Image 1 (cartoon, one colour):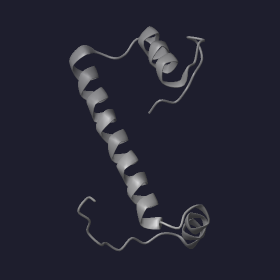
Image 2 (cartoon, one colour; image 1 turned 30 degrees about the vertical axis):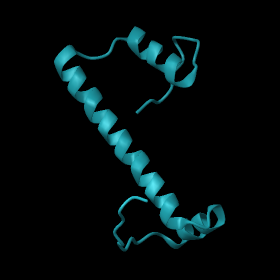
Image 3 (cartoon, one colour; image 1 turned 135 degrees about the vertical axis):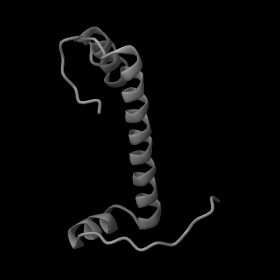
Image 4 (cartoon, helix red, strand yellow; image 1 turned 60 degrees about the horizontal axis):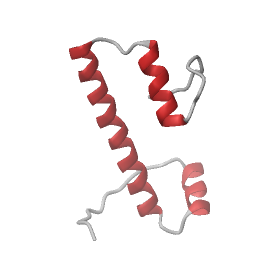
Length: 82
């Protein structure tokens, strides 16, 4: 088991009600959500640094990325990958 620290988080009542409907382990659910957001942030930073070095992604590169990530076969299809 990973080391943990107890913190207090304030959430809107509606979110807490929905969380309790989704899981009996609110702490675990929130920890997973935080981990996912941290990964997204780190990936976004890596992509930003790459583009600073190599230039902006081309439409072809974006289409290839969409196809790999979302299975979008149409290179003209738009999907939010951020």
